[in-house]
Image 1 (tube, rainbow, N blue to C red):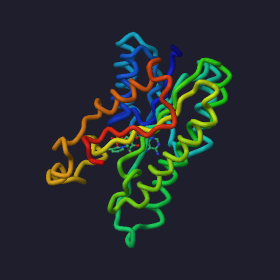
Image 2 (cartoon, rainbow, N blue to C red):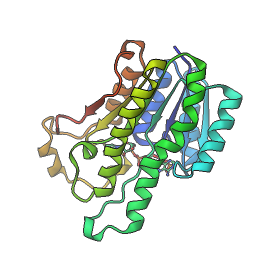
Image 3 (tube, helix red, strand yellow):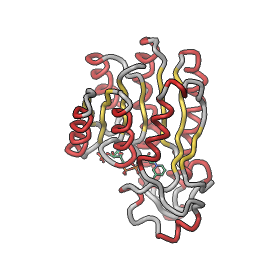
Length: 241
Ligand code: NDP
């Protein structure tokens, strides 16, 4: 098993649950945030308390130059990552006629460009390390089915599915698997004030999901036994779709 994993957007929410879970599975984890450094430092401290190494990397995933320089210098000092989970993401919801250019651009730049900005600098070192690897992007039920008020967000989450499927083909012969995990409605800051309890009626399991339930699927994808799973979109959505 390779040893270190980057989880973007792991200061809180789903990314934090993934970082903690992968540490529990025996990985060293680079915790990442945009502005919430203090929260990220706490996650890193908790990971070190589990006996794993941890670092905090801070940059805006939409800032290509910052992502490149921070990731490249981390790899120079610590070696290639075995895996990366792209969890950093935002919503800027609005009915399409009212959606501003800024709503559109910020979501595309963060959620979709962010994938390129983070994964591209990691891939060659991963290939050169010749130990296989794992790339996972957080898509969404909105990327599979679309969602009212989320034309921008749905576009990015569908875009990630295309990107990961193509990358899975490119990296397959290197033993690097590339998949999307598509959550339904998960209780984090992101959905605060967005969904009424009524929405639970649309979910066969009649509840929202927990970040740990998404992290469990990602932990599976990182195991050796998942080595033959690639180019897939795996839903964790209570049966919504
Ligand atoms: P949260 O809003 O709880 O957390 C977002 C995380 O992303 C934070 O760590 C935040 O860092 C980081 N982040 C946001 N923007 C940037 C940026 N520009 N650069 C760097 N880091 C950034 O989100 P969730 O945990 O709920 O969502 C995680 C992923 O799962 C997202 O991709 C989301 O689209 C997806 N998802 C979530 C669902 C849900 O119901 N919650 C459903 C389906 C998919 P900081 O703390 O520093 O701000």
